[in-house]
Amino acid sequence: MSATKSTIPRPTNEQLAALYVERKLGCGELGKMFERDPKTVYYWLKQAGIQTRARGTDPAQWFAKGGQDPRSFSGTKHSAESKAKIGAASRGRTPWLRGGVHWLHTVPADRNPKWKGGITPERQEFYRSAEWKRAVKAVWCRADACCERCGLDWRNVDRKATPTFPIHHIVTFAVSELRAAVDNLALLCRPCHIWVHSNENSIQAFLASPWPRRDFAALDQENAS
Image 1 (cartoon, rainbow, N blue to C red):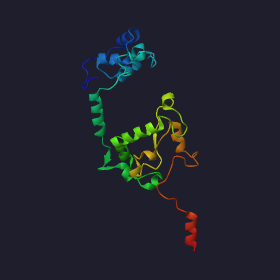
Image 2: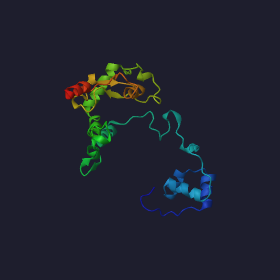
Image 3: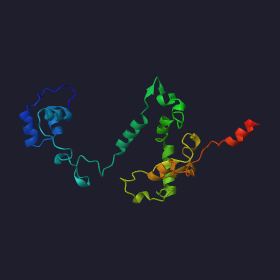
């Protein structure tokens, strides 16, 4: 769609019917023809009382199987130059700031008992670092690409059902010195990772606290005396 107002007049309802119904042109094609957004063309069709086709029924919009369709990126790879540009753009991203301060740093702790001081931007930055990438590679090699809880082999899973194997921090990410410690990381399939952080994990498997638990019974007894 052109950034400026189109000089091509809106087609008549009869022209729309001829192009959309008889010639089977889609909203995208008509949008290019009349220099309008495809959504605008869709509204034209509705205003004209023309029955629109359901999504996915237009063969012109289908991708050919096997990665042969020129519009599909399947089976291709980014060039080294493209990878360098994507990496530079990613590293150059900065979080949205409110008055120069990330909004997570302004959230009071009592609003969420799991709030850890607004480390999300710090986490995002760390996950792009070379240190983290080396740690991830070491964990995958140690685990031989298998979930370290159930043994599920990533090479044999249905990628649609289990798309990723997250790297799990045994001691929380908030402890900066252990963020990339390979012994503090575990490779888990997604179902196991969800289980570890659920109430079903009553034995606290794959979880450890860097802070000692307080003996409240002993503390109460001490205060009573």
